[in-house]
Image (cartoon, rainbow, N blue to C red; front, top):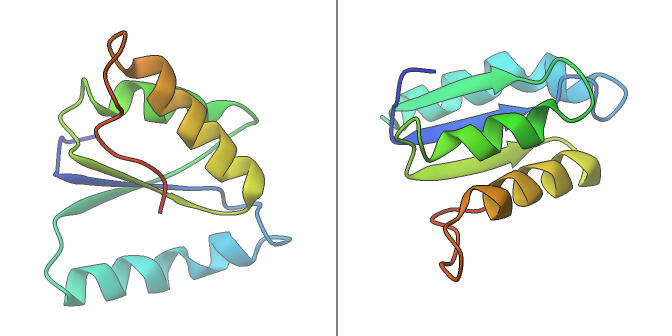
Length: 94
């Protein structure tokens, strides 16, 4: 991860692989919009949570989940784990 303002955490297995097939389309569209972002694909269960937990320390201002309910749940839990006690998360799944 490079520390771009936006991180997209994508589960390529979501939707029976449809999310993985959509990854290039998502990346192309965000680039067309001029958004500075990193798109990272999960590799195993729990990986989205790890990525989200590290996102703040890596300098991301916005974290978005691309996948299904499980991906969103993992990203949200990772963001909540990363926040200082009593502070709201800086970003959440979209």
